[in-house]
Length: 326
Image 1 (cartoon, one colour):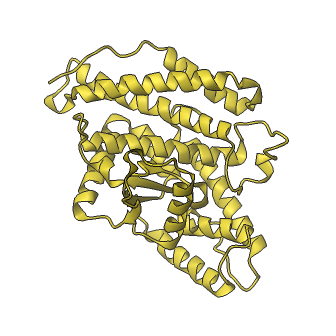
Image 2 (spheres, helix red, strand yellow):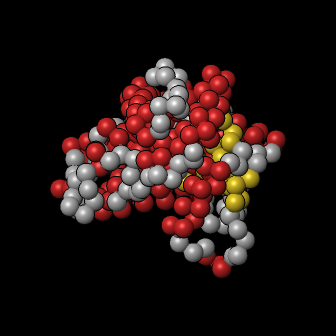
């Protein structure tokens, strides 16, 4: 696992997740329930991932329902286009409930609920534009996101901007407001592309940690390598993921600024001032996160320390100047 995107390495780690899901289902389900074969892409389906997490916790459905879910996932797997724009579904609602239970109270005291919603045609146009922007500015990043992300689900409400959940690995939950321009002048296309980079980094880290955890086991956290389908990650593990996501997002904005500053830049490369401001903010946050993680270096595994070192190197590069083409 590296800060710089690597689709091939991501695919290998994703295969490890799928093997874990398959083996978990085979051990936990009765022999009467046929588990898709190793060459089936059904194990990428977040519904199947959720089933594996549920059965290992004795929270799963009966054999008949499990068999029906697996058969549906296996039948649909060859036809999946990327990304799957997921409709509200039970496994996603359960995921959102877990996220909301762990989220801090909303600022402003809004009592408007945060809920999953269907994708409207205009939402689909906006998410497609964001994907095209990412493909234009950072195609290797998009390739890696494709390797570890299957479905995008849409939210509305004040509580969550976006999130991932290893119990539905492969899904990104994205707030509809990220598809729209911000009050500070950030285009919705750019905001959405940033969200894909950020949440995609979390999916990438989650997949990597199945084979090569970032933290050394401690007495109160248990051995992460032996219990990858665990209920949650320790806070320091979250800091590693946050650092990776912040550095990558800052690099995405720098690519946009570099394109605007290139000698052959076209009008389409012009960026608003909000892009420069966001780059500076993300870079500052990444420096702070790296400094915080440095104080815990002795708790990092070799792969975890390598991620931290690469983050330091990326942040040591001179920041982009205040270049804005109008």
